[in-house]
Length: 497
Image (cartoon, rainbow, N blue to C red):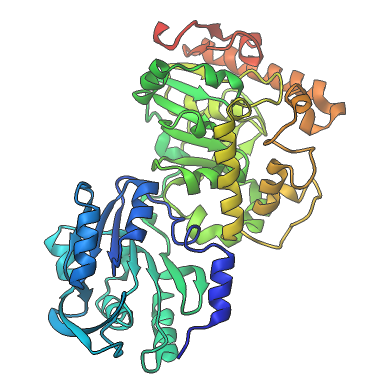
């Protein structure tokens, strides 16, 4: 039976090999199983993106030798000349040019291959959990997945990326039965029938899910560095960046793209959080404003794979107020700051037990951000955002409109707004020279600019005074702008402290 050509066409139209198959939350500590290594292209692409540990299982000798040679100098990619299955056995495999299968006859050329039980191999290599298992084994996926499910091994695989094959007898019925069983522990993140599909585990490490309460005094007595998004971030030297690698840092919104070593990230909007969730190579906690019940309900379609992920720490933005205190219960998830990420990050640093807070990249004078001065960074960020949009992983038709109150409730629309696709008012990327010099508050509406500027400065001044009154020192690298105007002590370089 031929595969559904419409599904293939849809896959290639969506550039699935470069989007879906590579868009995972992996990092250098992740473990990947590549079952059916073939020429090693998938392993190469995943390693290039995440620098993770990869185990390739390829039973056909000519493919194995090619992969072995290809990765001979890479200690994080291990190649094995056997396949994984439901039993320890040997079997005949038919070979035809660059294809192979144990389930159909492709030619008169055969080879005896070795297969090993997947759980025994994991035990032999002391592997408890696999972040991504890719399965493309020409019909062998059916007995392998059945064995994984029946032996209750499913919860040892965070993502199961599989290509089912139609030439197996009763393939459609067998696939449906496996999908029904997989749906008990996993959920589909994408599905192209008999092309590629991915199943992600439900409630990943739910017991590790943290709340603000868990961060009370986590960095008691330390200096905490809060990183903004202004162009002054571009003034950080290599020495500064090296210095920050060993410090506790909170990056707001997209600041990760300027300082890759941030310890935490925080965002009052969903899109910077999604960006970091998808594109960061570091497994850092991401503090995200839930926006209340209406926004959370509008974003419920990402509940399983985003809100319940262990990296995501939810908070609820509340009215600025002092004293802003630590949390006495897990249920209290408020941070005082409204829409000001500067205020919210400051409350978070206070909650974590900071003795000193140092602000870097906060002026709030003009709309220009650090990426506006570095074309390669802006181009990469725009490319990354368009990849997220094209994957349609976060698509929802609810609240998809240009109404100001709807935009924060729809991920695609908010990203489009940042890119300027919905008009220039809320654009953050690809600004014109004139837009660079506009007020930091222009996107809020010109009639409110002065009011919002004064309000934020007054609130932050109150925060700084309060922090100083309880013995917490506040510093800034900025020479002008809101942190200077609000009373933070100016320092010339990071090593001053």
